[in-house]
Image (cartoon, rainbow, N blue to C red; front, side, top):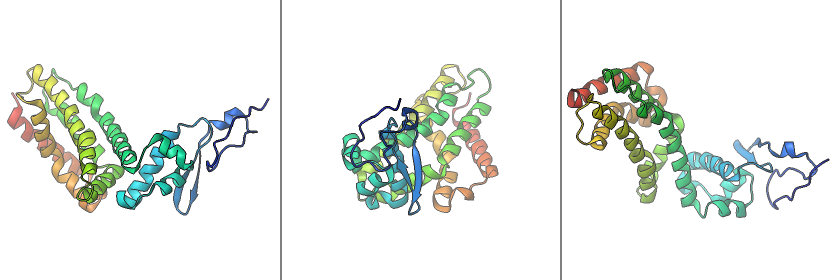
Amino acid sequence: MLARQPVEPGVAGDVPAELPLADHDLERADVCHETKRYSVAMGVDKPQVILAAATTVFLRDGYHGASMDEITAVAGVSKPTVYRHYADKGVLFRAVVQAMMERLDRSFRDEALELDTDGEPFIPLCGLARRVLTGLLDPEVLRLRRLVIGEAGRFPELGQTYWRHGFEKGLGTLADGLRRMADRGRLDVADPHFAAGQFAGLVLWVPVHQALLCGPDAVADADIDRHVEAGVHAFLALHGR
């Protein structure tokens, strides 16, 4: 028997009520004017669909150029639905930054918290550094960072959001890993958070800025290995035992 569900007015691509419930759980996407349109089916997590659409629009148009109308159209939902979950463009942008930075943090958090604290620190620190650097060289992460840098003069809260949810949070994860190594006597670290900043500067500064200015393809795998190994050697010269 076919189930009938109320359909939210004004939602682009709503599933007709006559379709079986199994079909309501599918997210449909189509391309319109070279923009990915996220048509929302019944039962799909609408905040996540809106977040995905907002990411597309912000990275394409910048913060100033993005509009809630365009995000609504790309998401394929009604405007009241967008505002029910995200009060304004600033709130939505902060959610985009937080989601992307949490994804990046997850990509190396486990490795930071499971560092081999019993052996020599060079190899595990190189593995951690490589994981962090690879994440920061992701094209989407680079585009977001360029966006924030470009808009931070006019909208300083954007830079503050990126700092809190991105760089500062990542330093905290690095500091946790370094603290564990210090507790096991593998590093001489009085201030793990400050040491995490040194670690990030030694390993990340040159390749990340090269990728920001020249594109991710400008940094070859051999360059990553060179920066990682040289940076870790320099860090251990400061904090090794």
